[in-house]
Length: 346
Image (cartoon, rainbow, N blue to C red; front, side, top):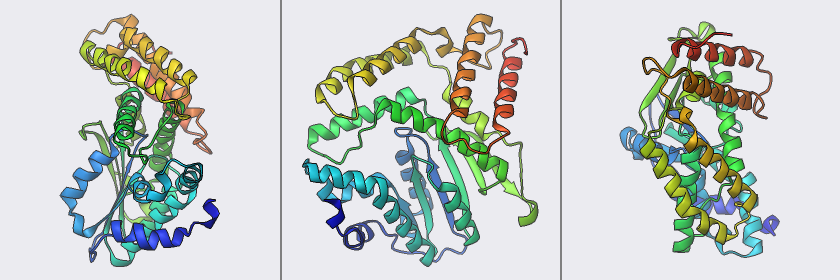
């Protein structure tokens, strides 16, 4: 049973030696939360950032890397499966925070990958009080590409015998994606971090903003727009070729995923995603470019309706709490994109 596993010893013997930053001493340490739903490209971007900042003085915190290190969790036995669940649900987060404590003690930079918000706001506030400049970077990859990417990696790992690969269900990924816009709304409203940025999957900057002014009068240098940027970037247009490639990737994966009989990929969810993706490919609104001159009014209206449905789903997310301005903000975004697309304002 997981209760007889010495998680402290696993941290001391496995996690800390493998992942603790070797050096610190930074006079102006930074913490960058690299965030977004599963499969959005966080690890790739974090590795690029790590190379730029310098790995010797930077604490990299990637939960999936910690999960892979604890080999006892991956032998395929029922006990290992139970231990894996316990580690992922509780102890992995504790080990991540212990790595952060190590970094703070020696003043290392911190790059922290987060798929689920959890206590990110509390951690960011605490690190700011400890003298860190805290940034929050959100990857805005559309959920369809993200899930197909996670499936491809999971199957490749399974083929190679790697039992540590993360298996993410479609409904889990879609629900996680709804949480990050709500977090951005809170972060921008309360000016919780020093900087926010929204990136596309390739790491290209879509929007960024930073806080200026004294501690008792902090304000954003530019109009807060990270929430809006994230929502619009996720709904970016796809070309016919890109949509065809996406569907082809899914059609190649679908039979293999179904044959795997993994609990994370129940048949009902596979069928739901199949219907979702085929509807997306057939929808002209998937190709709509907001800033294209003279857009087709029917297609523009369909794209705006899709964005409205996405905003409604965000507002219904369990991540939303005590955010009275979120509905008005969503309404202003719909008004803005309607004006840009030359649609009637209601």
